[in-house]
Image (cartoon, rainbow, N blue to C red; front, side, top):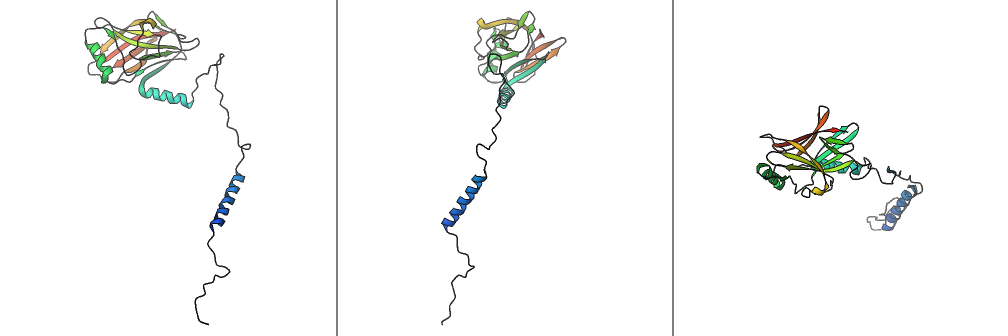
Length: 234
């Protein structure tokens, strides 16, 4: 018998697993996973979030993530100041306009020129006031409910240059409007503004509500220019 290598496999030799065998193993493993997973009847149902509603069925705005997200975006794009006055919120906000661009160039021509007119914003909405309580600017009463009953007062504010170095602040009932669309027919009224020019001062348009003795001071600033007017609550 001639010698030669015995190439036959012994009883313990391992043969490669066929594709059919491997596929069967995968199907079996998948079936075990599906059997262990809870059915739709077993899964806990997500808690239903109920929104607070008013007596008329309208929704009350809450502090949800969406509401907070809009608030963050507003504070990125607009200068905002909020004051708590006797437990009621008073908020004023305006576009963060820099000392450049079409809006500032238009304002500078008005401020430095001999003419009169309204400060208009071509790229943003006007200054806005939201108040949950009644305010009094001199003889002018600014009250909630101008948009809807039992709702905060919403107003647009407009700065107007008069003769000489006289300025006034106009309160308008149309808050949802653009910075070039002042409608005199919707004016509530106007009050005189104190104007100061601080040479060398810099900064974008800003707003502030500051305590002032027994009342408050609304301050509006843009670059070297600053306007202010006092008010009280009630």
